[in-house]
Each structure stands twice: as C-alpha cells, then as structure tokens.
Image (cartoon, rainbow, N blue to C red; front, side, top):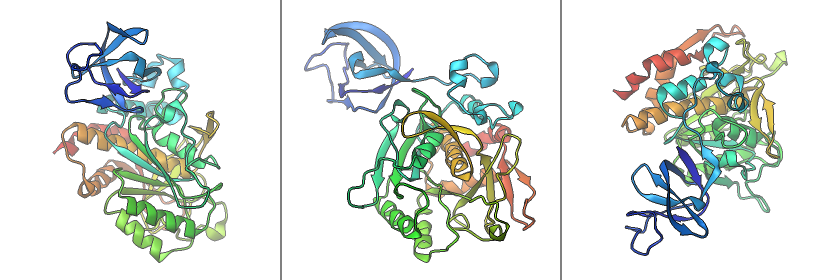
Length: 384
C-alpha cells in the first residue's frame, strides 16, 4: 500500500523505536512524498501513538507522520467488474473499458502495473488551487514574474487541466496518471484568453528553469504565429514531449486557419471527441497530425475543490499527457532509460497503434485515434 507523508519523518533502520542511533545514514522523508507500506505493527509509543509502518525496504516510520486519509490506493480492478460505486464515482467515462465505450484507462493501469509512477507532467495554464488531497503529487508550482502574482488559479481552467492529467484519487477524483509527478506553471491570469505575449514570456521562463518533467501540456491556441515563441518551443521540444490543444470552432470562416502552437511540427496537436467518437465540433486545421482523445463531459476539479465536468480539446490535451505518462512509467519500471532521445520512439509507437480517422474537414490532414487495446497488446515492444 502506498501512502503520503504529512510530516518530516526519520527512517528507523533497526526496529520501530525513537533512538538516536536507530536512523542509519540520517535518512528522512519530507511532507508530500509517497511511501510504500508493507506492514503495520506496534512499537515504541511516541507522542501517544505506538503504531509504526514497516516499509517495503524493511525500514520503519512512525504512523503519526503519515496521513491515512490520503493513502494512495493500490491498482484498481477494471471498472467493468463494478466492484465499487465509490471508486467509479471518482472517474470519468473515459476511464472505463473500450467495450463499455471508454478509452480504457483502468485497463491500462492493471495491464501496465503502474498509474504513472516515475513519469512527470507539466501543465502550462492558469495555475492551480493545490491545497487538496488530490494534488499531493505536485512537485512545483511556478508563475510568470508579474507583481502580486502567485500560482493560485484565478480562473479554474488550470485546476481543471491538472486534475484531468494526474489527480491522485485520494479524495474526490482520479486523473489519467494519478501517481505521476505534477508540475504546474501559471502563464495566464484570470482567464485562458490572453495575449500571445503572455504565452511567449511564460514559455521562455519555463525553458530557462530546465525542470525534470517529461510531458508539457498546453491548452492554449492562437491563430497568430509568433516566431520567438516558436523558437522557444523548438528548444523545449529537445527536452520534453509537447502537446497543444487544437481549438474548436463553429465559425466556418475560421476552420481553415492554421493555429499556433498546435501547427508546429514538433508539437502533438490534440483534439477532442465524445463517447460516441464524434469530434467536438469542427476543429481548426493544422499542418500537423491531429491526435484524437476523449474530451467531452469529463470529470475534473474546480478551484473550490468540487467535482465538475468539462470538455473540448483543452481537457483532451492533459488527458493525452496522462496516457503518455503511463507509457513512460511502464518503460522506466521495465528498466528502460527514457530520455528526450526516446520521446520520438514513444510518439511513433502511438502512431503505430492508432486508428486512422477520415479528416472531417476534407483537407487531407492525418487524424489518429490511439487504440488502448493495441497499445497494451504491443507495449512490450518498448522494452527492446
């Protein structure tokens, strides 16, 4: 069983006692870190509590520093088994199996033996309201250097996206990769509809930070190309897999516009579909492959800590980021080094295991829908 540390904990090496010489190497855990508990037992009473946890490596920690209300659940049985209405209530339709018109996220968790552990996603949006049990996997929150700013989400869009990618399920909601590390960068203020200058400045700052994540999820689109931002994205693409939302429009006059940054060749352009595989609605056209992921009436968290539903490509994009995080996690758990040079292989693997969809706009753009059954059947190819 995995659980989240709530207080600084010394690691006891010999037996569950608070002794000066029982912490070999002066090892400790910090709040927010995840521990792997193998057993629970009684030991020395400390601060009125004599329950200790034995960890998978044989060491001990005091249970008073572990928040049992935010234990990280073990891999969950497939939703199709209908074992728990409580668990099902914390997931969207897309977590369900393909046979039940879902994408198959829970099937992936069980087949891969991981829910994203060892992978990291960055959400580039309006920030996050992170004081929730479902966001205990956050490693960093950052923001553009604007006077009186913080990373707190004043709009809600960033919190929606972050929860879609990696909410831990500890309280209200499971994201797609609930054990992945989460990095959140606030680029926009109280609305996602911001000037391209905000986007460009934020990208440059994020690039300079050189953070250790794998996937950058960008739910922003603009019809205007910006050469400086494009140059920065080219640099970021040397370090990360970048996904960007393909905007949706009902305005026929705009449908043939290429959009930025989804039209860039080093970006995965993501559009949304509903449970019946209908695209939502006509998308802007890019000169790029367009990836189709679930993005209609999906559960996510709002800044007040409530569950809501949201959709469109801005939600499909962090969903896609979560899927890629599961693949990266599987590779790392299989002993493979996953470095930036490996990312092109992962994208090609997705292409090889996707279904082609006719371009709904008639512009001969390649639309691909990843097929989770094929992905899981062929996932061992990535071990080689």
